[in-house]
Image (cartoon, rainbow, N blue to C red):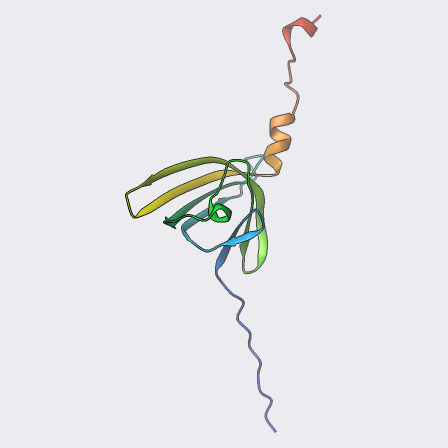
Length: 118
């Protein structure tokens, strides 16, 4: 008697979620996680076609999640949007940092304001 092997290959595709909605119109997706940086970074190039639905339009401050093989690798916020295009299409580049960026932005300055130095 021979046993049949069951082999399931996980989906190797990366997924981009904006405000909890799967966004499938990306053409390039980069994630940077490095111990020398306090916050992870991301950049995605998006190909948009007209008309653009309101729920598909990325906005500054929108929450994002990037998954690889259905596992979240970065959760953060859109901090910059750059655009280019013509009469028929629009290309957007969105970028930002993960949620650790909030902690970086809120840390106290090591020297403090001059008025407090005695």
